[in-house]
Image (cartoon, rainbow over all chains, first blue to last red; front, side, top):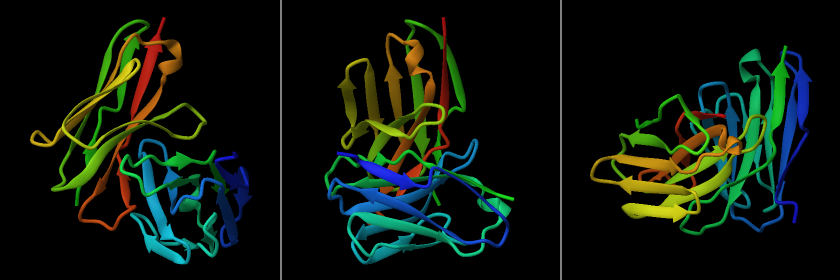
Length: 113
Length: 112
């Protein structure tokens, strides 16, 4: 059981470049999330999905797009990277149970120059 | 809007007890969760309070009082490995299922 995995672990982009972050989970969870974490600001929700084929905006969605074509995968795209998107990105998943437990991936450290 | 407020840092010695408070301004939520994150690592789930009262899991306990808009995480018999950041989080009833909000986190520093 790998849990939640993220690809890649590190990436450096130039301003204006695009990239896709991949998140995969093997726990058959319905819900998946993308967060960004910046120093002193905790975790901020970018987008989330409550099931295959559905996505919704979180707290800070601008500049990002997502897709959930398969239940186990949740992709985060940056169409035109900006230095303000330098951050650590975490993916998480959860079941529909009552305890709100989210399982996080190891994170992707992204630097935009 | 709503926010979750936590102290930014708490320092304590090994063996001591630390209480991390989380106060919030939101009209309704399903429950209060706590997560631990070590430097460079991913957040991991610690506890959940769906109802008012105390939940105990080993050395860690969590408490919720909806009437006081307040919760806390209690770390007992502190160990060096407890040095980490701790986040409270809620899922509001006014948002669609699945939309979580986290506090900014409390850095706990345990000294010998």
